[in-house]
Length: 292
Image (spheres, rainbow, N blue to C red):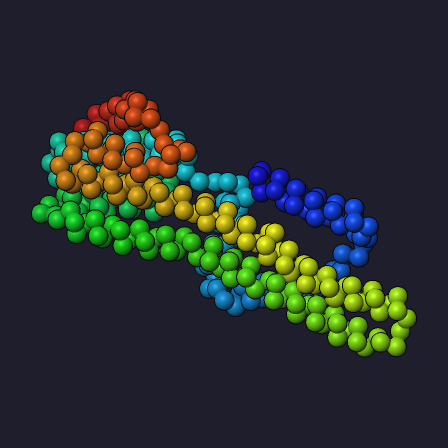
């Protein structure tokens, strides 16, 4: 919703200010200038990025526009699952816990948190490092380094759409100049025409420069920033899992380890310690009892 409100304000102020200065809005309607600019930008975007990034960019734009991302409920679910799983790791023998980790889709603990289970990437992340804990004889500093490397790789992949949009945004002003130059070339071919016609052709050419700059700094670059914010929040979940499991591997009780994870949640969405306590004791206990 915020994206559309921002675009309405931007377009309204720009077009309204131009009209208030005595400009004619019809002059700005130069569809072929926009075809040159947007078409060239789309073409270079396709050339510069593999198919997976192109598809992921579309998905990222939808996420940014809809302002999708982890909220407090999702964070509480992750902490609740981790708390239940750590209780199992602490109190049950290896063969009983392996069932939850090897087949999360059949685990009562994971089933108690369907939103987390539905995220295959975070489920695999939790399972992989829980499995390392079960194997035993772990060095937590090595696990921490491994986690950090994997999170960096995940973040790199998730921010590829942002980087792709930034490249397009940076190139749009230059593409606007290309469209303007083509318009000027057309105008040069009409030097023998009336000044009114020649002036219209030159004005149309200048629209290309305006459109390239506006599309870059008024639409694409802000949208890229929005995509970056949305994708960065997705990475916080991995950091929460990392801090929680590392604290547990270092000997912390499950409830204390969960507090390490809670502190990693951004302040805007961070639940209170009472919220986390209520969540972990109300939701993990039934799933553990069922698993037993």
